Image (cartoon, rainbow, N blue to C red; front, top):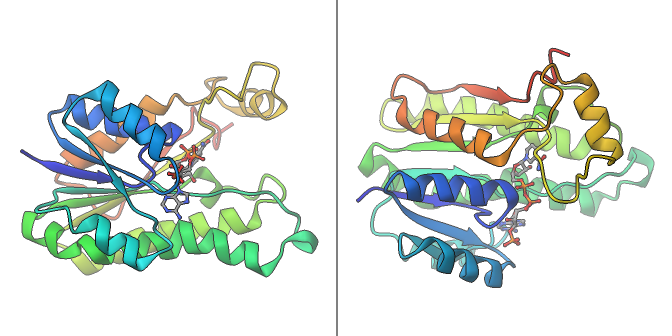
Length: 233
Ligand SMILES: NC(=O)c1ccc[n+]([C@@H]2O[C@H](COP(=O)([O-])OP(=O)(O)OC[C@H]3O[C@@H](n4cnc5c(N)ncnc54)[C@H](OP(=O)(O)O)[C@@H]3O)[C@@H](O)[C@H]2O)c1
């Protein structure tokens, strides 16, 4: 049976990605850092193909311990990510480092740890970037935007380095629908006003593209935007 590891597997997007891979018959390692209870109840709802795994991408020991459970790996989805909003004058260097440590260095740490298994399986990696990597800041998001820009560059450089054994692609989602974004939320209204399709992106619509990239063996070093036409609006 094929195996996938999804970091941040209990997040809004992580759940959709895990669910899709379970539906496709994969054994899914759903990695969590702090959300143990969410991971346990998610596993209970999806059945034995979903296996919760504790893995903090900021902690090399936690990564090594979590990955020690893996005997093989076909797909790595680097989905963990943190976000915050501070104008530059109020952005502390410690916060800059935290965002980069999770979004960029954490991606590197986890990728390095599982690379021998991915090489063995001639597998593939899908990194979750953001349209913020491609779009001038929404205001106060310089650090997040720069971190996601680094994810895009890392994806392309890694794809060149690992070819032809391992493919590496990225998905750059726009604003993903979540319970806190009710129809009156200003961010949602701003997004829907500009997006050509006048809507937010459903988590499973991003998961669909992750699944497509996993299946399409002709694709590497690509960044696919899933934004309901926001960037073109
Ligand atoms: N939501 C959006 O509109 C949007 C748009 C574009 C791109 N994205 C990207 O899509 C990805 C998922 O976003 P989301 O909104 O679904 O996430 P989210 O709900 O905000 O959750 C963040 C996830 O990151 C994990 N995480 C945080 N610190 C971690 C660490 N040190 N080690 C391992 N995992 C850690 C969390 O795990 P625990 O809860 O277990 O701590 C959680 O699963 C992120 O990379 C995000 O930047 C999101």
